[in-house]
Amino acid sequence: MNPWGEIILVFLILANLRLLGSSRLVGSIRVVAAQGAALGLLPLLSGGSGPIALRAAVIAAGTILLKGVIFPRLLLRTMRGVGVRHEMEPFVGYTSSLLAGFAGLAISFWIASRMPLAGRQIPALVVSTALFTILTGLFLIAARRTALNQVLGFLVLENGIYVFGLSAVEEVPLLVELGVLLDLFVAVFVMGIAIYHISREFEHVDVDELDRLKG
Image (cartoon, rainbow, N blue to C red):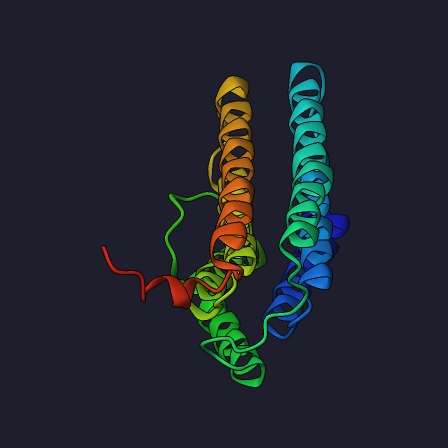
């Protein structure tokens, strides 16, 4: 693998650990933005020329624009609208979250070393990073109370799927990849609107409190 690609993958791992140990929503949004922008560079490192290079450039531009610029701006605007700056009482504390993160990282490397990949020479670092990023996203969705943090978990989960897709799938039509990015944009946009209206109606975005609503 290209050394720059390895650097990006290591950065993704460190970003995941940072997200697991952070209570500041602004910092977490910026970390996810940096993670998305770094992911946008991966297609450009795959090499190729002609139509392949053009396709990689289009995917990279779309990924950086959406994940590195538009999504963070939407989430920061939503955060300012609801007036929430910190995750105060998560279901799982931050020290425990980091310990779970290190355990998840070890498990990801173990699974990657034993995963059959149909004869393709895919570095274990790629697969383990993808698995760890997916696990981090799922953990944030399950272990955080604030709806904004859960949206971040959704984005991190998609980032992990994106990494795995780049490594495991050789040829996916450009329209399919752009369609996935568009679907993700719509999902984040709708989530932002929902969080804003939840905050206006209930004066909080703690999803645990919503369980108390009676039908």
